[in-house]
Amino acid sequence: MKEINFEVFETISLDNAKVFVDTYLPSALAIEKKTGLNHIVILAQAVLESAWGLKAVGFNFFGIKWTGKGEKQLITTTEILFSANAKFPEIISKTKRPDGKYTYKVKDYFRKYNSAEESFADHALFFQENKRYTEAWKVRADINLFIDAIAKAGYATAPDYATQLKAVVRSVTKRL
Image 1: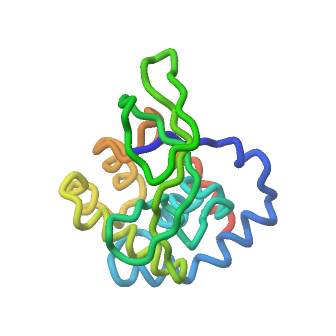
Image 2 (image 1 turned 120 degrees about the vertical axis):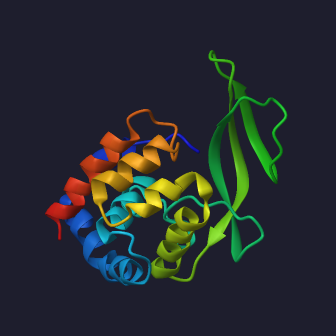
């Protein structure tokens, strides 16, 4: 998946965090009712992946790329890859890193949603349909077990993703 940039977490105010939770809680609860995926996990991942919604262009809270399904939008993003010949709709810059990988600043197509609930539903469907997350989906109602299972399955490149997400869970829970 992708590396996560946590710079923005230092600049979000406590008031903005409360507004985020209050605003998107009804959508997360609706998806929990439909799928069984815990609403706190939905909100925490939305927070972590979108920096409290600041990077949720077109309600895309989870950075889901467009794969021919649904509406699309062209967004500037950063990708870190091993390939020196990656293809994107537009490459703005490419820099070789000391670790042998390449940092690309590109424009790529991402999903666009009409609402937070639509985004949350697609995110739940991602876990439900992807065989890599079969074990996680079995424990989707249990916050800690689900987080550990998606981290083990390789949801993010951050080695401490489960720890980071659990910290966000605590932050979200304080604002409920």
